[in-house]
Length: 416
Image (tube, rainbow, N blue to C red):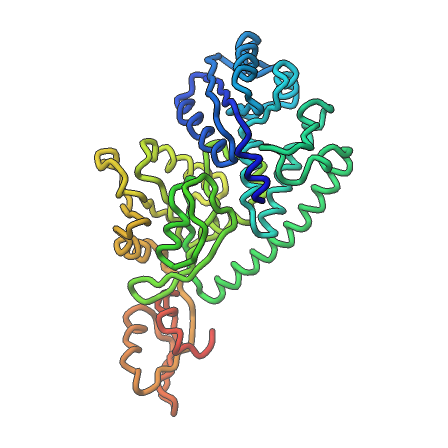
């Protein structure tokens, strides 16, 4: 791994964008720079061309493409990264014209995911996304198909596999889908077991690098890797979190979102992202120090809706307020915190408890005579169907919310 990282640091890249009059071009190019940095590239320059539409053959105009080639030769650029998805023909034509290896935003993100995946599930998900993306691009033996030397955009399944025939690639995709279906089934069973056991789940979602892992670590001592880089963690981590009332919930960290997150990744990571869709409460965490954090909140909301989580309760969490401009936060409702310093975390825990939907579970409790006083919690927060004094104490057959059930778990006899 160290050898690979050294090689990545030697990659010099040119970032290229096409401005179609969209309002987010500048922000998107800034993100592309961060993505390139995360992948280990040294950015030699940024070039953007204003156009009414991308050129069907080369994405940019022929004159601008010549300027790109000249810049690359003058600055020893070894990689061109386009800030939009390129068609196989566009990629081939750009490489033919510049003689420089070219990748697009999707390939860059897939490469970062390949380097960050740690679990077997994560590696399977990334490989599936990469193969699905590369399959229609197996069109020739140019620069795009001669990457045995490695570099950004080639990490993952490996070029030797990508150069085999389409039938083999499709067979590999089918095999990966079968393995991931098994994993998805396991995740589904875990979630069903949590529901049966009355475990309340809170999912942390949000834009990449918003501080989600830092927040999880601060609240639960999870020890999750936390770096100032995009997509620092991919594999979901779940930890128990104690609320002010004394009840516990399961806090789940999820993969970060980004604008134009490749649909190949969304599909491949579906079982992982369902942790957010199936949660009882979603924490939409954003970086309050970013001048465009409102856009980040919106993009995350749109992706959640795309995943089918529109009806879930969402609590907005504005992180990094220790570095934020207070004037920039005006008019935005949400819990303001700093996961780094701990500021506002007590208010966040209270807000989580208040935002949780009330879920009921029927249980049978037995309070020893020394603890009978605690049975008043049941009468105040639930419904008692039957009660009986026995030699062991007071037995109650009742319906209570899951948080109360968690508080009283030491008295639970059995589920009814």
